[in-house]
Image 1 (cartoon, rainbow, N blue to C red):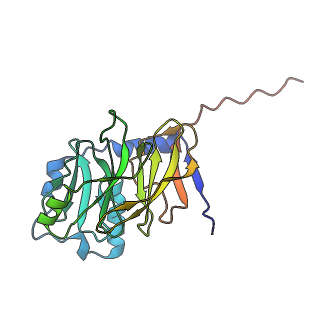
Image 2: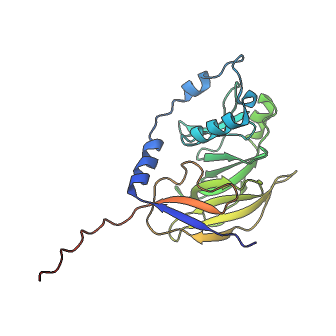
Length: 237
């Protein structure tokens, strides 16, 4: 079946709301102090509750692994991964951000500037092991595998089956891209393909929240529309 790609453009009001969400201040120490050894973990909550928490935290740049046992977030110019109730671990890539766990929790996708001019981000994936605090600390040092071939500004998301990573290419000529990703003893990445061109006037940080449905068939973006011109007065009779 041929995928049906649809892109919904939202106007300036939605753009303002999106930017407002991004300005909520985050305090890393507060995040570290919100869990204790006796606190209930997300894994013990009903699936619907975990999903609601994932969506709410995602809007603040905090991603929750599908089983609710790991968080990733960006604070103090650093991307962090932490077990719920555990200790945050810094990802030792200075520019890494926009982390997204694969649905099976075996990979962490993110954007970073590695061996590129400042500001030229690419999409990467890295094997991650959250089975214990020590395993997590070791796995954030894994070598990331580059996914994008012509830079990626953000919009990173996984298809629900975890076999495809989506991202937004960097201007000019922005497009939504998709690449096959297979986890294993080594991470295998396919050649990215263009899904569709992005409408001109794209606005708002592409890192905010998920922008695609789980089947990667529909996308939501914010677009800066030109000012509306006042209607011409009726012709005199």
